[in-house]
Image (cartoon, rainbow, N blue to C red):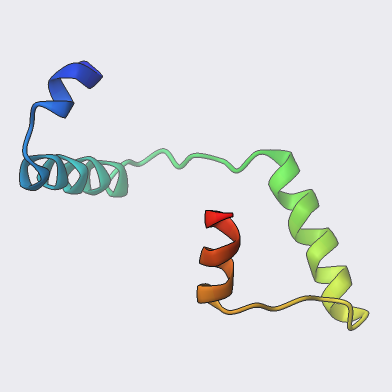
Length: 68
């Protein structure tokens, strides 16, 4: 299926397909492994939190930053 074909689908059709894709991935026996850099980032963030340097923001603030 191409992006052009997907764009011709209604929102409901696209949501149904997304749901089916997620469901199929959820039942996969093989799990995707996170890349090594994910672990590195999480470790850095954990250390910042332990040092009291972690920054926590609301979801609304995060969304507003993303719009900028």
